[in-house]
Image (cartoon, rainbow, N blue to C red):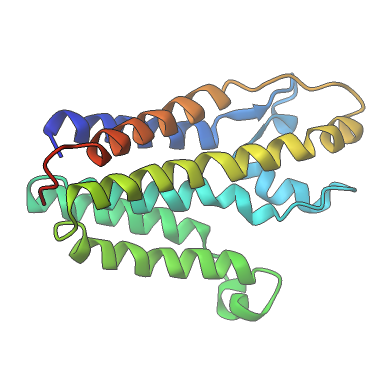
Length: 201
């Protein structure tokens, strides 16, 4: 993977994360303006919202795994990326003290995502440099799709219920644009690696 592709991937991940914490549900009242991260908890209390709310955590999970698989050149860059990725997985974990029994309570899937993500990051530190470029490209494309599609689908499913709660139609928040552009850039990086003629490491 070239330096240009690596930087494009980093920019894509950064944009996707900006989008996660940017506004998806805009409102003049700041307390009613919701990001994707806010929606993960908000939809639990919205009548009729039957989709699994944990899907809103997938973009953060995918961003962490993708970051550590970008093959940053020097060891300092790789360690820094791993620390950031582990931090992203840590915020997915249930809050204290629910973390102590999150594996068997209402936070079960959040616990599984966070803990499993940490293991995936640690495994990727060892595997990323050993995978062939095409395998790495396929992984990045898969992470881009998994990071973007389920959360966006979930958002579209609950828009009607949120409008019913707000008692008004809601617009499209600015966070959606960097979210989609970021995952699109990462998918392009993966696709370019996937179609390389020489399947180098």
